[in-house]
Image 1 (cartoon, helix red, strand yellow):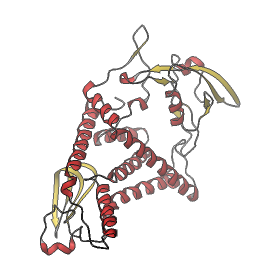
Image 2 (tube, one colour; image 1 turned 90 degrees about the vertical axis):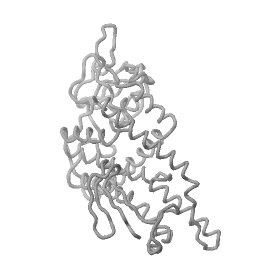
Image 3 (cartoon, rainbow, N blue to C red; image 1 turned 120 degrees about the horizontal axis):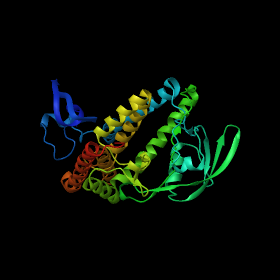
Image 4 (cartoon, rainbow, N blue to C red; image 1 turned 135 degrees about the vertical axis):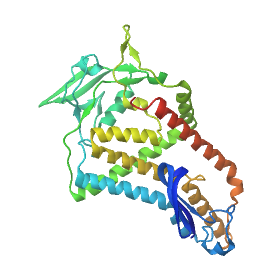
Length: 363
């Protein structure tokens, strides 16, 4: 196939050079890569001399391999990074699937946890009868019980205690109320695992990140998700919540309450914070980013790679019913849907960039 352009990133061209028949360069938005192949669809104009080098002229398996190559590379990078972390670099305790955590320093006396007597170093075993593994599981259980009194089983040294905690009700950005406990996690020391265990942890973590990515994309691209993003933009920067008659500042917001899509600016800001706190934790962000790009590119809509996969597969199926006679989709009929997808992508891009500047996560 004839490749005429290969760029790192998307958007306006920053720098490029030509070698042979291909232009190489860098574009403004450093997210993924862009490759232009002649004859990707029936609207592409090309020199008749290149007819046998077009994308459409190649067999199904060749077109499929080209369309999924970018996502495959992102997945390979994510897997290799996870394996390196587990086997050689070491991960903070609690990052392995099922690892435990303990309450970190800084439990405020005015928080629900402080009022109930939770101490630094306590290990929370269950909340309201539900067993706790990771801190993320703990957060999800607490958030679902705003304003409730719940029994909490914790381990303190050699003792196992049961205490009653009156969870606070928080209402971030006028959204639905969520429960607030008032503790953060302190992980055990960084550790590595054997090669065999690293392989298992790698695929388990990769599967979890991929599953979370599918779930997150479904939420963001749903009508309610797009509407929520639009309302955040229209409502402007959030202001610190107040609590109580005295107007005291509320305890620090649960980071999960700020959950929203971010732009490359937000990713860079989060990455900078991670590097300051623990440079190796930045590698987990690298994993998440690669999995996201890989999954997002496979959404079966043009102009994404998944759209080309869907078209190639549809053409292959139609050709089978035509006794092998090639069938090619008329892309003109898909243009309205393609334009709609582009508009959604532009909306996501502009909205997330605005929010990352005007109301950064954690800011």
